Amino acid sequence: MPNVMSADQPRPTPLCPSRRLVAAGLIRRTPGRTFTVRVTAVGVTGTIAKNGGAR
Image (tube, rainbow, N blue to C red; front, side, top):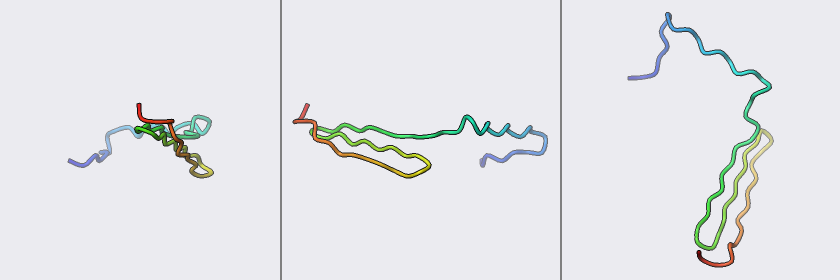
């Protein structure tokens, strides 16, 4: 069933602009490499670094 609001449900309160998400990111480690990605309103950055061998 789709998530549809009915007329008798209160509308969600919008988030305060001072509490917006500024950045999100992830770190993924594989044998021999670490991937780092960061996403902001300005753009996306990332790195791939060697770990110095398999763990």
